[in-house]
Image (cartoon, rainbow over all chains, first blue to last red; front, side):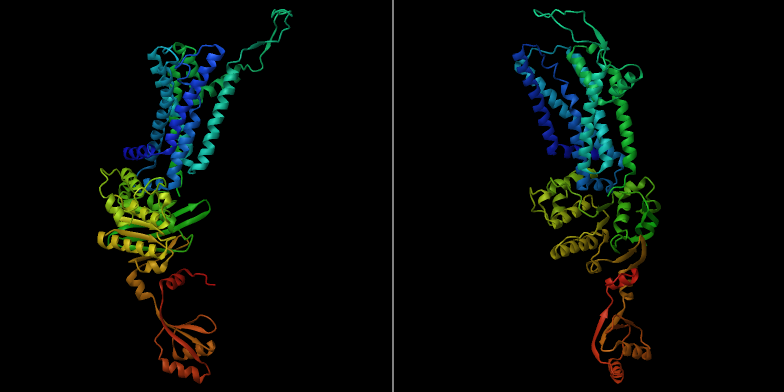
Length: 287
Length: 303
């Protein structure tokens, strides 16, 4: 497998899509930081660079990984080089792990590019320093990495059996977008208050209410078994984990954040997705 | 005789379609084995099985003594190189980069030998040109160069001359002959171009409907391919009667032409036909070609 990994990494570092993703992520980070900074100047509200932005990109990295994985693995199929690997005597399981590890390394490098742009903005003087303890930030990076790896394992499990670059791309991007939308919707319901205040009539000369505020059950609130299901899905989805990590950093709640639980979910997903992917890939007839 | 590849009752089914149906094959060491069959006969399917792209449904094969079900098969596959249907090359890389990539896949310690390979296949002047800008012939040659990385003992070529111009076909043929005769590489080559194969092969395997109908050496085939005399006459029925009287074996081709599988006395035949009121219009001596042998073997459809 080491031989294949060397070959795949050599190809990765020659791959145009990889460099486009790298530059895009760096530029995207810079764009987010700049726009939020100028917003904060205009509307007089406080932001902290880098804490508020360091892990923001993790919420969208699924799309980048989907595109990169479909392109990289799809090229091996479209060029036919996967046949060379099999004909040369490599086992399918070695080919799978080589593609997986290459994908994980690519995803981590791309995410580090995002973080580098944020740190560069901080260093250029937009803000003072980290609000969170630097040790906690470093710990958080090590918690984020398995979730990014879980994303990669998911898309590798989809792309290797599919054998078509176009089909992988479409399926991958749709799934990535689906996950983002799902996490947003789940988060909306899970963070909704149980009761919401009804609109009140106010006096002409101020905002004093004419009547006592009244409350009703919030239809967005979920409880009971439904809440448990929503929470389970949210915890399982890799970008759900990453949203929680990001919020913990932004709202200075890293001490309350259960990093071990997140890592356990992420590692479990890596094992499950990889096992399923290998099972399907082993049986696949390659043309 | 030592065999590089042997298959025993090899079968491969895709849902309800049986692509290989109990194929038994033997490729001797040092041979150029011509694999001949119609479209859909199972040639590429067999090659895919040997290369590990697909598992057989039943049956087995051994490659350099290693069974396909054993763990030694992976080691045995390192002794072979293959070009299956289309060359497996990265379009965005140059010829040299593709070869370097194959060297990495094989785990070779350095990139020595790449220049020699490029010269051997005639691609040493391609420089920085990307494969996507190569002609079909250049890609085929690069595919062969990639298959030759790591000095294989067995080379499998699936229709290597497809889409090539006559010059390209000659170059590939000469390359294959050089590899076989000078380097002792065993070659399995599947092709539709029987005439081209007849200039290369030392052994033949004729496949039809997933079965090997005949396996034969080139020498044996030469002996089997029958000489005949093709005659054109004005009345085929009179010719048939005359040949029956003379006790000669023949085959009627159409209402004016027949093949006579013997050396008839031409004077006697002409006089006999003339007496019966039939004119002998033409007389031509012929050898049975590989094509006609193949057609007779698989019962081909002629229009």
